[in-house]
Image (tube, rainbow, N blue to C red):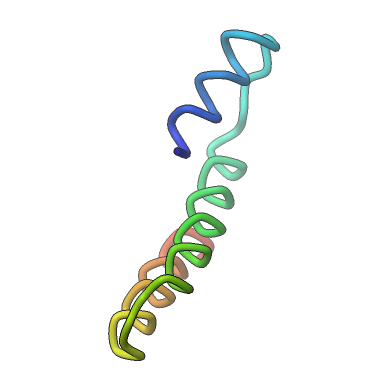
Length: 55
């Protein structure tokens, strides 16, 4: 999903996003996906992974 949002911004609106904006979107997307995890362990892993993008 993230790739498509960036592509659409560039192709259709001529918007160029910074690396920081892309990293923030990745972080947000992973947090959203973590809500779909069936175990606390899996959710914790996604939350930790998402923090990589804002560190």
